[in-house]
Image 1: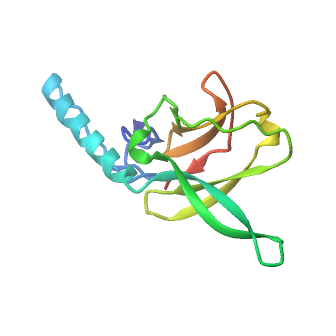
Image 2: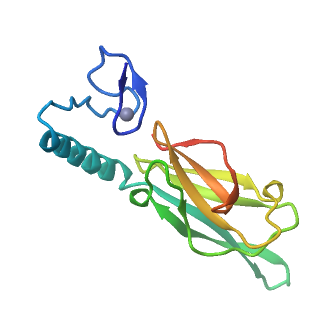
Length: 166
Ligand SMILES: [Zn+2]
């Protein structure tokens, strides 16, 4: 088995590139540090290219009173939480802003732009996350270029289902 050095997917030896992200298999030559440096340089550039389109945002709905005094959904704003280039394997990225505690049923809508620039919205249930006090949003990068949205704090959080960036 080979392991993709870009997205960590394991794949069969007969493949010359990763079936998940398309990154070619790079043999680390026995030449020591220098060849490893070259390989790592290629990986980090490929990673930057892949991730350059990726963004994770929170969609904010604003209500405004209309002329008859009713609340109307007026606009939708995107609050950028993380850019793809800020994400790395094995370390969660936490957006600095603290959100106020929520003790009623409500959902948060996360807009994920994948490596091809396609956008998809994901609704997360906040009540189930037990966020009665202040909380933050984090993003965790996982194998095969998937992310999970984290709600809570660095030391205690709930994770969303994995979302593919491919
Ligand atoms: Zn891959």
